[in-house]
Length: 127
Image (cartoon, rainbow, N blue to C red; front, top):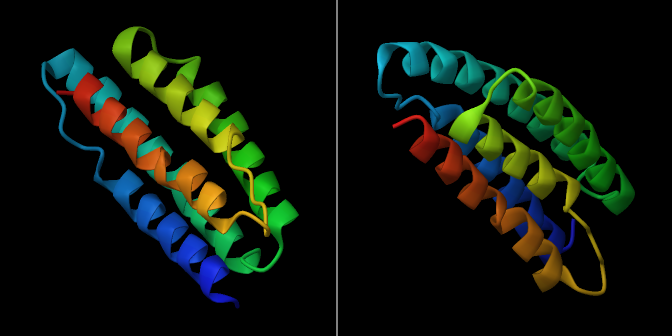
């Protein structure tokens, strides 16, 4: 794996593990919603991470994994309203926006690095 691809794979793996930390939720009803959303997002992002690991050298497979994860997050977002639903939709948009261009590894990293901001939005919606 070339150094830019290795950095991209590490960034994606880091994001996937960050997705597992969506647990801080406030009021009881919202806490239940957030707990459920967090569990499902963690599952989706674990699947995404697994797909990324097997596709690390295939840019189109990386994009396909992002599209698949985005579809699952969009479906999940349909079960929530308010800030949690909006934050999940933002995450889905971020996953859809993953574009890997071998001639522009920095641009590719930016699309992946933006995903952490969406996780932060979900955490904020749950606090």
